[in-house]
Every structure is written in structure tokens, then in C-alpha cells.
Amino acid sequence: MYIHEAAKLSGTTKKAIEYYCQKGLLNPQFTENGYRDFTEEDVICLKKISLLRSLGVSVEGTRKLLKENDSTVFQRIIQEQEAVLQRRKEQNELLKELAASLDWNAVQVKATAAESRQSVTERLSKAFPGFWGKYLSLHFGKYLQDPVQTKDQENALHEICEYLDSVQFEFPEELENELDQMNSNGNHTAQCKADEALSEAVHDPEGWLNNNKEIIDQYLAFQKTDAYHNSPGFKLMELLREFNQDKGYNSVFIPAMRRLSPTYDEYMIKLQKADQIFLRQYQQ
Image (tube, rainbow, N blue to C red; front, side):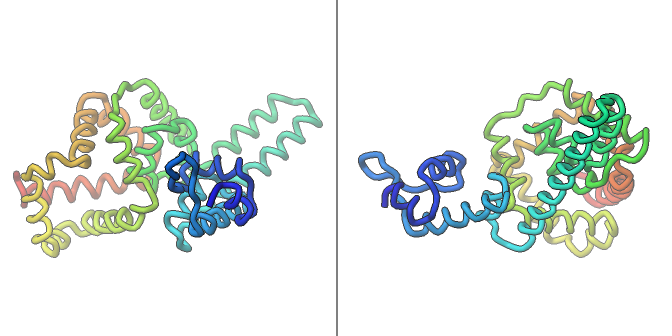
């Protein structure tokens, strides 16, 4: 069916459908003469999109819910929207106060305090919306869910922002796509399993090594193959490894991150101990 029919059946407009297609929420096939050809499944998808948008879900949130339709994703979206609503309420209250008092300095102090209550992940993602935001979310997100509470943490966050803003790092587009895939909801379950395995290994490294010896040996053997060395994951890892060594990542960024996040600092202490145990067993 053509777009006007799909619009009628789904209860939306042609302009809205064109927008959804442009954003990749819907991907209908094209006819030989270049018109979009919508199916019944497309109409069902349009109805879902329209409902989610009417409930205030963002385009990105809608994409996530269409891709992975489960309660975990819904709960995450709900929490995000509640946080946005709470911040918006605080902003409106401060705007009312500013209108009544015209005391710009006093309201600025309160606005800064309100911003500091955002999680570190929110603040860093806002400051670095591209590659660095994705990288930080993937590798450090679970350690940065709390707001900054001390002056030293605030200083550490400032150092991290200055470092990321000044560092030069060429990141190939194909590897950024790989990073997007790693960040996507489609990989959420796999990422959770990997995090659980790493947490277990850090907590009891000797026990974990003994229980997973066969899997470790298989992985170490795979690391020697051409398939591994030609994989996007390996190329991404090598690029980041070179960056870590040459750009002050380990001497500037990681120490600041440890000061910023007590949970990350605790994790790093355990990780270093686990790494020594692993190296003793696998010297290569």
C-alpha cells in the first residue's frame, strides 16, 4: 500500500511517516517506480510508534523499544523519563524564582547545584555526545550512576572533561559502528553476561580460572587465528590500546576516574590483583 493508505490505517500523517522513515524507525520496501510500499506489519509498527511518541518517548527510546520489546527496556525508559520530568520541574521552579526576584546570581548557584545532582554519566554524555559519550557509557557507565558529592570528585570530573576535550583521537567510521553495536540494546543481554563473568573473575580470580580453564584455553587459541586478528573487535581493541599507551589515558584519565568514582577505584584494586594471578598462570 502507498503512504496515504498507511497514514489512514495507522491514524497518523504522511509527514510523520516520512520522519519515522528518515530516522530509521520504519524501513518499507520501494516499488519499481520509486514509491514506498507499506505492508500490514509496517502499519502495526506505525501504530506502536505513534503510541510511544504520544506517551512522550523519544525517537531513540522508541527505537530501543521496537528493537527489544521487554520489561527491562520499558523500565529503563520510564526511569529516564522520570528523571527528565524531575529536572524539568526543578528548572521551572528556578525560572519562576528568577522571574520573581531577578536575582541572577542566587538562581545561578541553585541551578549549578541542581545540575550537580545529575549522575556523572548524564553529565559526561551531555558534554560529549559523540564517540567519547558512547565509550564512557560502555566501559564506565555502571560506575558513574551517582552524582558528584565532594570537591575532589568535582575536580576529578573537571580533569576528565578537560582531558577528553583536548585529546586528539582519530576513530574510523567502521569502528564507531562497531561501538554502536556494542552499545545497542540488542547486545544488552550479552553485555550483562560479560559483566557478570568479569565480576566473578575479579571477586574470586583463582576459582574463576579453575572453573573456566577450557574456555580460556579456547579463547587464547582463537587469539592466534587470522579470524580474530581481522575482526572489528580486535581492531577496536588495538586502536584503544595504542591510545591508552600514547595519549596519557593511563596517567591522567584513569587516576581521575578512580578519584571520581569510589566504586571504580575499588574495582580497579581487585582487577589489578586478579590480573597478577592471571599472568602467573598464563605468562604468554
